[in-house]
Length: 324
Ligand SMILES: Cc1cc2nc3c(=O)[nH]c(=O)nc-3n(C[C@H](O)[C@H](O)[C@H](O)COP(=O)(O)O)c2cc1C
Image 1 (cartoon, protein in one colour):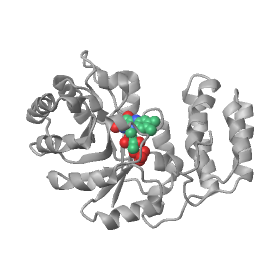
Image 2 (cartoon, rainbow, N blue to C red):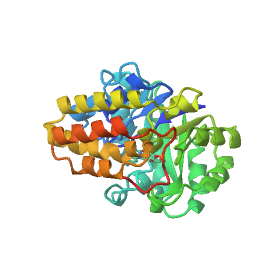
Image 3 (tube, rainbow, N blue to C red):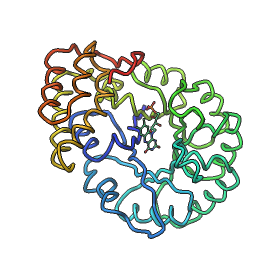
């Protein structure tokens, strides 16, 4: 089974992907956090740092586009093709209110006829060899919307449909609707990838056993918590304490170099500990110290104590209320 790292805006940026790729095997492709092409048809320096092949050397990466404007999509996809990308991904899943109210991301699911016109335009454009994949939810409000969406998807040569079995109204909170994923499969003609709620190697194995027709899984939060999850799911060793520490140290050093000042680095590392903390047993007091850290010194000393003293778990502690 192929394993793809899900796009996670604010988490899986270029520094994170580089450090992850350097330390952990098992991820077949990294899907990049979305970029929103604008009408001036220019890549910003920040976008180039994210999607440029230089930033992603040695890795299979797929840029993701968030737009409802077909001409902007086509311009951007061509630019990405010129950079050497072989696949671009269309975001039909983002649930954020600011995105959805503009009719983008999951907001595109509100108007299936408009979505169909959009897909007609982008799939009839000459994009050379570039493949278009789609990442979507089951619908905006209810999974009952999916058969109509699937009918539309089936009209186009979508290279891969990544289906996150929640509706927009679920955001990321309610449990993933696994049974709705199974119900959706017969409606789809293109290759389908499962995404959502996989946090352990056993979860990957269950998916493979229960749905042998699915050949790929996309994992986001599970890999952010346990960066060795893809390797482990493919039969490799579980996460080791020292490798998590070296991964952490590389991330931290790169952010210190690339971000403007230590405050933003410390702030960002605290966000990441919301994930890493789930690989440790106990440690509430130490995680509070990380959360309170205001400068590099106090952050480094709290993080060092976690690595020096807390037992590492073999698998993520997902049921535990967030430690940080
Ligand atoms: C912090 C965060 C940022 C995300 N950013 C994106 C994004 O840029 N594009 C996208 O398609 N999905 C994004 N997602 C959704 C994930 O790609 C994924 O679909 C979702 O987390 C469910 O998969 P998981 O349970 O394996 O994490 C984001 C999710 C989170 C938690």
